[in-house]
Image (cartoon, rainbow, N blue to C red; front, side, top):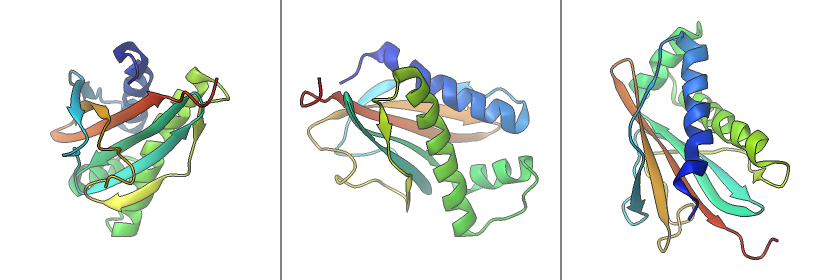
Length: 155
């Protein structure tokens, strides 16, 4: 489990993303720990695998309506599932990419995996715990979930 202060980079990344999209401050709730037996999720989820000194994943999950309003904010009018997949993956990749610049070159991130709904135990080991970071933008709620552990195999 990573220290709570180390998740600040993910909080900063999502705040920057939403401020660039609409210049409206996003509200970040208080992060809290959950076990991975009941993952937090919404309509669309973008998952980034992490390897290196830290291993695990970071994911962003949001309802369709939030993603539609983000698209409108950037001048797009799309609302197909494919456009939702692209956007949620882009948001997850942006958040993780910002973290990579903070943690260094050894912080390896995967290409986003995008799914409808709840991540499975393929992505979230049931014996681990995750930080859930609640996000409110305009009137919509979403989450970032950070499940990272020290990788003892990499020193």
